[in-house]
Structure formats: C-alpha cells, structure tokens
Figure 1: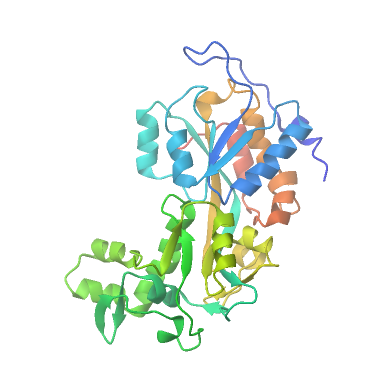
Figure 2: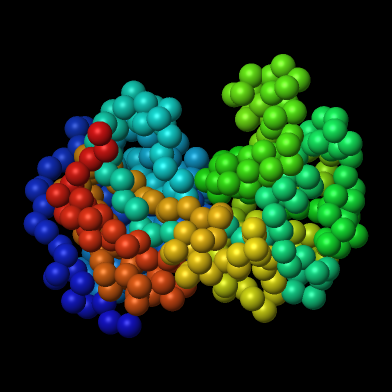
Length: 345
C-alpha cells in the first residue's frame, strides 16, 4: 500500500517553541503503553518514517496503565509524547497528569478491538463460553448449592457439562493492562450477576459497591495466572499447556490462527463484523493520548497523530483493518478533533 501522499494531505505547519530549560528538543516521537495497541502503532510508526521526512517514532509496550503513568510524569523532552491505551484514561490519571503539569491532553480513538478466549488449536474442545462460565472458573467466590463459597471448581465440566472435563488453567491480562479492566467489567461482572452471585453477596449484607468489587476478584489458588507481558507471553503459556485458555485481542488471535482456536462468547463468534455491529459482547475502543504541550516542539508529533487516523491508514480498507482493527465509524470526527488540537474537557 502507498502512503506517500498522506503527510502532504494531513501535515500542518507547527510553531517552533521550546520547553523551559531545554536547549534542544529531541527529534523522535516517543510512544509507550498498551500491548494491544502496540502492533497498530508499530505499523503506523514504520510507515510514517518511510513516507515522511520525520524520523520513525520509538514505540514501546508495557501496558496501558504503565504507559499512562509515564505520560503523566510531566512535560518536557525527557517524557513521552504519546500513551497508547486499550481503555479510556481514568479520572485519577487525569488528576495525576495535571499535578505534574500535563494539563492539555488530546484523546484519539483509533478504532475497536474484541477480547477473545482462545486455546491450543488441537487441544480440548473449548468452543463456546458464556460469561457465567468464566466467572465460575475464575471468580474468587462463587455460588454453589445456593451458598457463597471460595471457588471449589477444579475442572470446567464441574459447573457446565458441555465444557471439557480438564483442569482449569487460565492466563489472563495482569492488572496493569487495559484489557484486564474490560475483562473484569464485561466478563467477570456479567457472569457474577448471571449466576446469582452478585445478588447473593448483596443479600449477605454487602453494599452494592462492595459486591461489585467482589465480583471481579480472581481466585488466587493457581488456576488463574496474571500475564504482565504482552500476548506473546500468553501464547507461550498456551503452547506449553494443552488445557490452557488465554485472553487475547482479536487481532493477535487472527494473526495466530495456525496455533489457536477461538471460542464464541454468548453464542457470538468474534469477528470484525460482529464487533463493528456491537453484537459480540466483549469489545472495546482503543485510544492513544497526545501531550498537546509537545506539539510544535517534538518534530512530527501532530503529523504522526494525523497520519495514524488518516482514512488510508485507520479506515476500513487500510493496513490496520487488514491486521484486525475494526474501523471507527466516527473516524472523520476524530480527524477533525486532532486537526483542531481539541483537548479533553
């Protein structure tokens, strides 16, 4: 695909200013954050470097929370310019940013992705899940014979005879990953309510807020393993454990179908079509955040942001969609927002 016309179509003149106390700004855009957004950002960074006069941006992973923490450390050439995130920035992170002088933040939604549950291609027949299955397998406390108890389940078939009678071994995103938050909200919490455990917790005297928090607690007896690295680490765990179930982004799964098979969730198969329609229940928007104070100081920062969300890149026919990103139907509004350097209110 040709990208040579993109920058001329999207680049704007930027003012030449300097950070206080900085003799000379660096000339490379620096990006860190979500492992889900990482492959998209890497594709864009490489194309940006090849098709513009700006150096190729440096893109690092580490997880959404870690990336936003670095982003909020302050303003200046010794801090990153862009944070990738598989969730929206939290209020406490916005506050931390402001306390460190990062007061003008541009939010850029790049598209959508789905969270999928995948296992070894030739492993047990994990082909269909409901949120209740994942909660019963991984919840810290579950409902059994009408009583709330510490999770006693050792195999999947113990609570759903349609699932394989193999030992529970799940590999889920660690707490620093934005994917974990979506997993908690759209799978564990939904499953907790569906099984009646949420109501049982409230009936036992817990406040609704405490019960909701308890619903997303994960058992700590070795059946569930937090993965702090990226999806390649999860894949390695699945490779070495034929009974393992891993949580992946749709795009990563689609690029590893020779090794993995995916399960439906709520009877819906994950695909770009089912995510775009909203039919698949475990999907989420993906973002990156730009430090406005660095625009005009770090060469190519605004141009990189505009390049990323150009129709030719993030649109339905672009390379990011080919990799698995579900194009945002409101992409033109995001393009206008970035062009106007509109910040979060």
